[in-house]
Image (cartoon, rainbow, N blue to C red):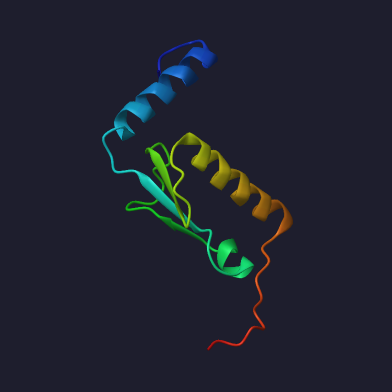
Length: 97
């Protein structure tokens, strides 16, 4: 890829190399709790064993829902993007029990 004169072909080859290298690595895991209060649902947990390797497979667990698959990934990513755009509904004034 690094000696390819055509930039679009070089980018495609680079993408293939990066994805092939990350194919055997453990998944990036994200979890979202769908139970409890709206504040608890706003909290997203994200676990990575090594930071910076975003080419690894991505898996999502929705606690409180039996759904699995690509639809769950799309749902989680759309929720994260929405929270980044419009903010989180966190109640920091709430007293802990």
